[in-house]
Length: 200
Image (cartoon, rainbow, N blue to C red; front, side, top):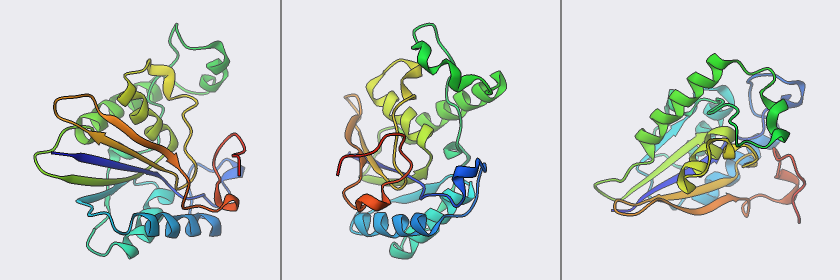
């Protein structure tokens, strides 16, 4: 039976540029959340899970207004995390990213994402459409998992705020990346959270 995961990065966080670890959505972030909810309003979702962090929980609450049949459920498996550390095959350009990351943070992130993959990236016994509101690195790890890419490859797989990634999980074949970071529902001025400017 088809099992679809709809992965959405949370909306833009207020004052994110000041390095705050968490906080409420900005005005733009709230608009982004409303627009992704409109985009997904016709999907027969089975469940909605979100990271317990405020920016993800608030995004989920806004989306749930459009999807009253769903009850947003927090999941610690969707927390923001560092899912792996440096490896010998990782390009040296990424070394600086890990300068302030501790081995304990990496170990915890890896364990979390192992559990998240086992929980969410599995075949279903009936048609399932699961909505996950989470973070950039978590989505990057799921995409890396789909391609069975090297551990470091989540680095550089970036999702915009309220960008949409869809994965189809199959029972007898590897999972399929249906779409990654789809921004068709967002006008150019709301395409935030990416390190590179996007073409119009």
